[in-house]
Length: 244
Image (cartoon, rainbow, N blue to C red; front, top):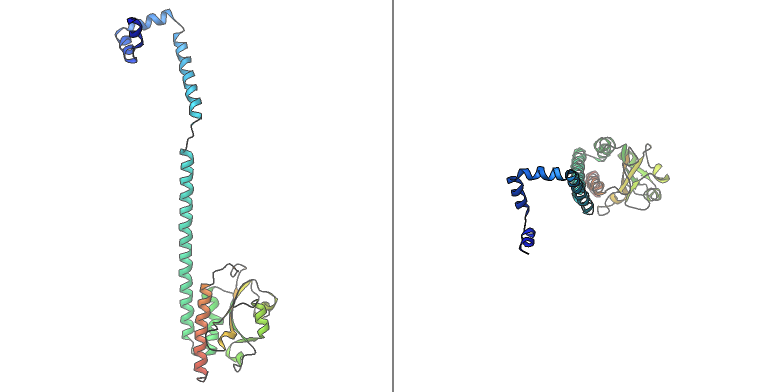
């Protein structure tokens, strides 16, 4: 019984010590069992295959986490680039509005203001052409000499689809308002909170491409441009006729 217990208590360290102190025992085992090394290598191979089978059941998350990290980094980069693009566009928009305002302030009368809109606005905003139109039913003297283009109110309503702001491809009614063909356009009525006849006047902006103006385009800058034009027009009308 003592021998059985002592055999069960043999450790790997005991075996290593024995083989180290008795190197001749290894030679004796190999001589008595020439297939021992082959059996040992086969046993090791079976153990490796067994470990491989076990490892195949383990989910390795490292590739998935690395792929997700790359995707997150790409999204962050795209978001940053989008924010920079928006910031650049906003800066450009404010710069354009600033130059347009200076041009309007430099004008001294209605014809001069209309010339700024006709000749300078296309350069400032990179457009095909710009003009002010007015409902012909409005009594404003000789509007043609001033530089305003009169059209029937019904035609303007049709061109804008009865809206204060129209963005997109020109319909048939809008085509008749244009001095030259455009790919897209914006028609913005001047603010109705300003004195008459400002609300009967509209600013027409002709785009160079079909995407220059479209229904999903932000309108903040366009509204600001119309407000600046409306205030300037009101001031020029007052200077022209103090009774207005």
